[in-house]
Length: 338
Ligand code: IMP
Ligand code: ZN
Picture (cartoon, rainbow, N blue to C red):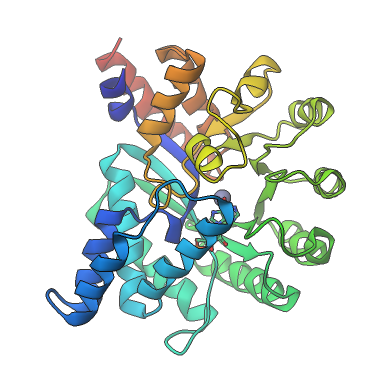
């Protein structure tokens, strides 16, 4: 089964750029950024050892700070983007929607951040032609609303010149921080001007926020862990898929075990869903492994895995022609693996 899943031309819809760098990729990145055998590089390797692969949600956010150090320069960011795409391509992911929070520091502005990521996506597409890549600009809910407004206006600006890559907005960040309603005007403006919205929703228990988010609407829902039965009916009625990230949810502690993962309720309710990695690097997984976990835990068979991939094609933010191309690749795979 794992071989079949590794070969399957998969579709990844929920992948944070800085969370998608595995330990070995971070090592590659460290080598590029600091140079081999430099003091900085050796210090970095020593810090890897302290990485706890089963840390809880709050600790995961500390891990991101660590990765962000490595991507805090133009060079680091460009290589990180290329390596993340390389790793997804190696797992036979045929389409990935990366999402990332544009950042500003002494090395780059938010506009430059997006520019470097978009350029690296373009060059990675030449190097790894089998994978198609899109980008969502993430709003970090722990940051001020003014930053969210800037992120939306930059995403709109890039969508005009690089609309084949920049397709939407993601709302993410520590779910215990920030107030959703504060971000509504920025999100609404993005949607009205043609950007798609993927929103981290119901990642933790917060019924009033979940209600607000569902009333506002979204194209896709990140995690959806605490959606009620009625909410699932809503998702089904409005054809909003839940982006299920099994390893991320269990390792970060928002779901207590794989068996209790809400993928089961989503399948029973026949509600829309897709399987994703979230942060394949931080949580030490791949999309093939996520599918494998779903087959092991919930007994999904090969044709259900194909159906889930088709669902992901359908809910992707790709154009109709691009979706058609993905389906053709799937058909070709099925001919080789009847
Ligand atoms: P980046 O936006 O490329 O820097 O990716 C890492 C960032 O994505 C983190 O700092 C968080 O803001 C966000 N993120 C990653 N995983 C999660 C999650 O599970 N919930 C909420 N936000 C997340
Ligand atoms: Zn996420």
